[in-house]
Image (cartoon, rainbow, N blue to C red; front, top):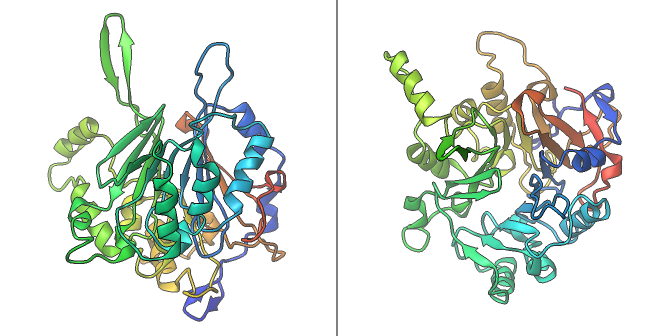
Length: 391
């Protein structure tokens, strides 16, 4: 059982036998350019996330070229050093538009504290910047806007729910904020966390295929889906359930089955979820977790300590119940067996497990792979120290 710390909870240790020292992460990124990799960096109570996109071939004479998506930058130093490591290992290549999209989900310092440094250093390689349009009079926000306005070549976007963006075979869909919330930012008021840009990433996305002289939409069945919940709380998710309604069978299961074939999967379903608001009691409920149905649910926090004592015990119990119902009397499985993992996680020898890397292959049948990078919040990531979690 996890140890409670004030209002928060320290993660359960993962048996060391389930963590294999691995030198395969770097070769996997090199040898599987068709795969997508998601990184949740260990920055304590905050979010810094990186998506390594599948390779694009710009010209037959050039090798595959990979781009990045960045979602939030909590601290200075860590993300630029991580990008330099990817470059050192020849996983990314020099290109003007290396960062396809950079997103500041909302203007809290634990999400954009390192954004001004990033834009000053790497803004010249950034194509597009997303933020929700919520004004916040802090140094991090003002300096982010200053850095952004000094780069008129960066497309500045304020997305609302339903906006989609395609980058090769990857589809981004904004789940929140809904337009109703967006229109209240400057008038009726919205909690700054509910201004968060929650994002769904699908891979490989549906595409148009050529068959002779005909073109047709190829709807790929159940692509990988990753939901990044930012700090969205109850109001935001309630709006998302209105914007992306769930299909209920009711007493007409045949009709529901046909509609599902035509419309595709539930918009809020996900295989991997970065849980909203560091697993705060205000960001998660059982119904949301049940609807998402993740195989992996990831928490970015200090593990019971910190100013806000994330993750909160109440939220973790809701997540656990949503992922593994026990109301019938079943015994609760350890967190790592139901797919719940923390950047503040430790092994059975009390060694920190740190940042999380997840590999999503282009074919669903291949399964997910996950590594722990064994870094502390203030330490740079060393990809050579990866330990693969054996599910």
